[in-house]
Length: 334
Image 1: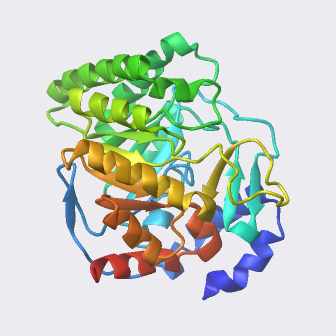
Image 2 (image 1 turned 90 degrees about the horizontal axis):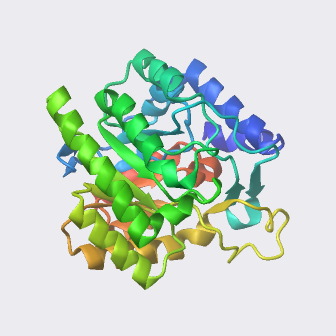
Image 3 (image 1 turned 90 degrees about the vertical axis):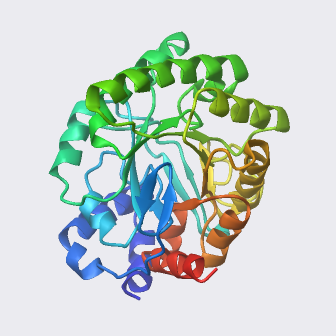
């Protein structure tokens, strides 16, 4: 109810300004936001989730608002994307609302404080639930050295993460999606898997790894990703990130802006990739459904397509915190 009253004010502001204002306000008034979400325990990646509704990476890029987000009742929270070195991201403006389509276009470009400052923020959080940390490469790291960035970040975040997500699917870092291609993906996941084995011995725990993929994949790419995930023991796949397509936003203000499209227009596309991965993986690797969830029914469609968990981002911008409770309630009632 409160968010529905505040939304017109927030939507009157520049989107990135509104984004930061919402998060800082949540930090101050987190106690007022706290809700009791229906419990619906599920075990995925060897982890016990109190409910299957999570926060997607990208909303809290620097892990500065973990406690405030936890107050909303998420079963898990994913923060980042974080890179080894701090970087400002792409020039502003870089975030655009398309309210007629319940959509967002962003071209942030992995703006973040770098892994050292990021981990300081993680350590300050009081919440002790399931925390995913999403890692990527710096924009100026040569493509052929991308694996070095992922290994560096994995080594640093390993002890602090419940699971780590390998983000190779943002459209806003030049060349990043090339890492989804067969040979590049096989080499990257091989390095990461070897690093995880070494870190498992050092820390005495095996932290699960998730791979986040794009919705803009063909059948061959989906098959190659499934094969690589199996080969290298990746523990989950997140389907999907934002899209470079503009289906459903043609002719709208900001509809031709560069960046990744998220929200309602990509729901069907993201769910189709999720279903195709589910078929290709035949239940051997769990899936996390993301992309276009604006109602509890949307979340249920992801589960029906093969997901074990779901993640929210753009839907929160349009629906507010009640979306978390709604999704959790619908999934519990299935």
